[in-house]
Amino acid sequence: MANREELVIIRGARSGDAAAQLALGKLYLFGGASLPQNVPTALHWLCRAAHQGVAEAWQLIGAHIPFEVAHAARDQALPWYIRAAQDGGPEAARTLAQLRAAEPAPAPVALASSVPVAVAAIAAPRATGGAAPAAAGAPAAGQHAVGVGQPASDPAELLRQRTVAAQAGDRDAQLALGLHLARMNSEGDRVEPGNGTVNFKRALRWLAQAGEQGLADAWFAMSRIYIRPEFSQRSASEAHACLERAADMGHSAAQLECGINAWRARRGAEDNDVRAVYWLQKAAAQGSVEARQALDRIAPPPPPASWAEPLLPLLTRELLGSQPLLAARIELAAMFRLTRAEALLLDVKAADQGHCLVVDIRASYGRSKRRLVPVRSAAERQKLDRIVRLFEQVGADMEGNYRQRLYRLKSWLGAGLMAAA
Image 1 (cartoon, rainbow, N blue to C red):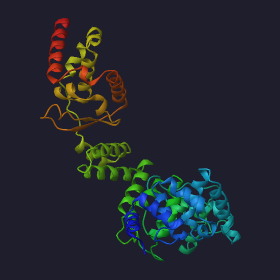
Image 2 (image 1 turned 90 degrees about the vertical axis):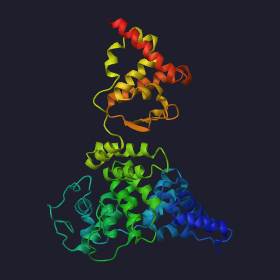
Image 3 (image 1 turned 135 degrees about the vertical axis):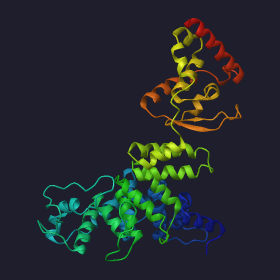
């Protein structure tokens, strides 16, 4: 029976904590104080940790999980032996060679001749790209190859072809097979069960292999599976990890959901609104109307005019040379429609988040509110980089407090008007 410390690890692993999954995998791999050594169970937990990007997990799989155990769970273990071998693990490379040598070859001659055709013909179309491209020698639309030129109207035969193509390493077939086993489409919606039963665990294995080959739709589908209430290994944290992997790969729906989730969780961490704007900008750039609407609610478009715009013609070379920081703040106010207090008090280096400005002067100006201003174009990004470099060369205390900065602005403005006259 597990002791108290091991029970804490078990609970953490079941809740989706990657560090706890790694620790539990080690306990089963090497044996713990109360837990007996159980290599197949160790493989299960190390694979779950590896799915969350823990490099040590797949390195342990490659170095310590023997071929006999890996072969029994080949679909689950194979991607991590590949990763471990790529990291230079000699034991992983040897076991990987054994797994590939033990892979069953397709028996029927007609089916073997049709694998290149099946790869294109039976892979399900992805939501982000439409139908899969046809391979050389592929049959006409509406026909799936069984032999050469033979249609595959039998669902069982089509499933067999998908399995062969997936085992051959085709990522589209792996995605299609995973979606079939989960009885869902690439957008995460349920589909009619048809023949057979739902098998989420097998679906995750195929989807993970497709995801490791760069299919964002596979990671998005995995995130939908992990939040299914009927899934025995339901995990909100793993669903979020898969969703962010899909978003990082450019999946528009995943970016939109990441942005909305971050905005809803803004009370938990103040910088969540910054993450929300980041993901919503990514989704909006791909044409998501919902992302654009959410972005306009979080960071409303700037007003058409700014108090600083009429001052831009006064930024002569002489005035720029005498007050470069003040001139930069006026330019910043005109570009991002900052109020006078925001322009004078903003910590420019801390405010720049790459994709937006965090305008927060509450510590010095109690009447203000924290708000975000997106960087909307490459030209704005270029000007902001120049201004940030200027402020990186000086200390924060060189400009004085708000009253001193305001006095400097009024004095400079009066001198500028006199010079213009």
